[in-house]
Image 1: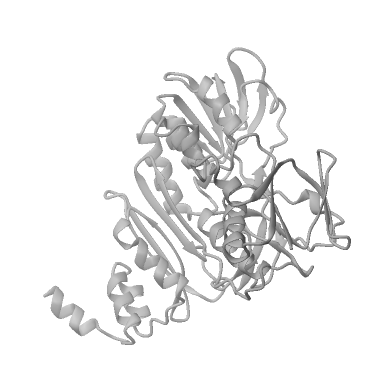
Image 2: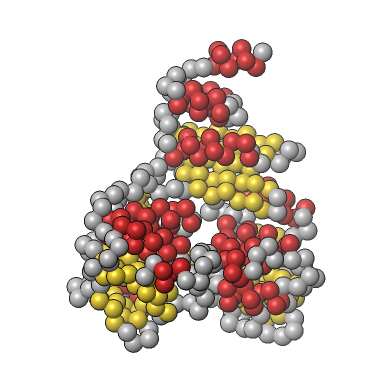
Length: 424
């Protein structure tokens, strides 16, 4: 049995290891298109800060790891898949035949259509090659402009600030982290960043980048910024273009069932390129976070070797540290039609909490500065816990999350009297 895995990121590596453990005699080919050993993109900010070296980004530290697993590594990029013929075409001219195929090609940075985006000194922050180029230019005192203040952008921003650069951030949304945070929370994060010395332009686009030393960046709000480095962090998309005409169904990502199998028997997908069912939202989604990639890879690999296993669901979790301000987003943080919500904001303390309900189930939430309740919020949302009368208690006082979680978990609808007596 020949298992071909496209993509040598966390999902690809975990799948290869799982297959080998369960199928000692199988043939496994791992295809990756970068020169370095398989590594974690999430470690790149730590590399830029200097907490680790390049080797510290590697997913497995032992050089002989893949050889010992008898996993054949191919350095190439998939250009086409023929599901009917069960073949993969690579950009080095090879054609691989497979019995089982895992598509774990991840995602790639969005390249905004801006004049000057290809100039020297303009880089995404996605690969180790990108990190090397950024490290050369992002020296203490260097002027850096970052396009994008989403989740990935804020992580990059943290690393840049620690390098001692003069940082400006441009976000086309009306607030920071707009796909993760509501208006109040996003505005709080912006104010916090400005207090830390970052210049933030929200509701603004980069219109053009002009060559020179320094680079000249023209913004839609009328400002012109002279910088030594421009970083593009405007989002990512599933890397699935090579699947056109393959016979494999793709929506936003590669569409899968609860076993991570596509519409083609024996062909699976996992990680940032996979579109899987999310039980909280009731929809198929692409959730590009490493815990999802790892679990999807494990489930897909078990099914590839004949062990029928179902994915419990997609985890919609985001926990972000923005220059010391902790924020979280779980599930349907924007709410659902016909649902209810409650918000509590303490600007002076830098704390904000927003809870979203469908009936007596908390389906999503946002928080800023509520670090003690992160696990409880995740448990309530992911567990689809029926709160009963505790839903009303939370609507009156959203800070009572722990009490609500304990009460609901133990099947008790109303501990309000006991809780009130404890407070007295």
